Length: 496
Image (tube, rainbow, N blue to C red):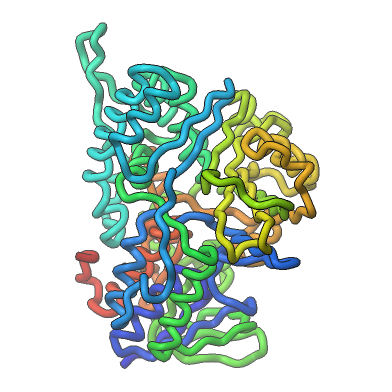
């Protein structure tokens, strides 16, 4: 039985802790804040309750597997999972709107044909077929296996297939998501639909590799889910599973150093001057934090993936509305920006960040989220990596965009609360409130994440800033990979 210290109580760290405890190890989690869950937080006021992190759950199989492997009670016995239908509603720049059924390719094709015109659905459906090919080529190396030592293979190969071009009598391979939209979808609304998946991750579709086609594919193939009571309930369930497996938790425990001796990790030091010995240390922290904990000696092995570009942040505006949610309201609506180029330049270029943004509107209709006869609505948009506030003007633009999806919004408004990147930074420890992106192939490896192993024997990295990157499913997969590497050793080749 090994002693294992876990730094941080984010979802990846919790997933690793539960699996390691079940394997018979003595696991202790040290979290600098007063609660668990990382970005999965909750804001409550006057009987209203909001998720301040992710609002929907893709690929719930990751957490179903976690609960199967760590106890007798399945995930559905611990939380109430609800399939979101429609999966999403989209309001485009020209005022066209479409609701997309959940996990139904035929239903999505029919909905797009009806809303956007004959042929639109087929073009999107054909794209999803190609996206599945990219998914099949990258699923295991990107999500289910430790990062390959020869990760350059993933960096150089574009898994999204080439498409025959009728006029040129040859095939043409899209290099970016924007090229997929321009060459294959050929409709600005379908392009906005596609690029919205990149924007939601804080990625510029003009430079994001075509392999990002796996992002819409995951949603259409495996569905979108909500946890009754909010996704914070998922964090609660994973935390309680850890407690049931006798994982020790120390909240308000600020780790200041990772101790090494004789070329191997030996434990951690805390801000109060105490130390905890450990045979293994699992760090669920941002890269800059991990470098600081190891005294800046560097924990990445030679030949590691290149540093990622600065990740974007998120601005969330929470709205308490008088009046009940209307019958038939979509859980999630994406209001697309009226000027694509202006938005992209404001987010990723040098233009002033004053363009109208793409905004995601979450209206869960959960009776636990608001007093009877009222509604809780959360609005989210991406914030440029270079922007550190103020955010008042942007919050107003976010609300103005949401009015296209929520008629009479301002007349119904009781109060609002703004969650800035600084609030995210406080919850997660990531500088600037940056949100990590999921790992993607191609693009020279700039969207891969560092491996879960480090140059220091016994020290492992877990969570969104390590392989396989950001997002709730990816965090759960990261926990599984780290647990496998510790339990089975360096010969571990991934989950089955």
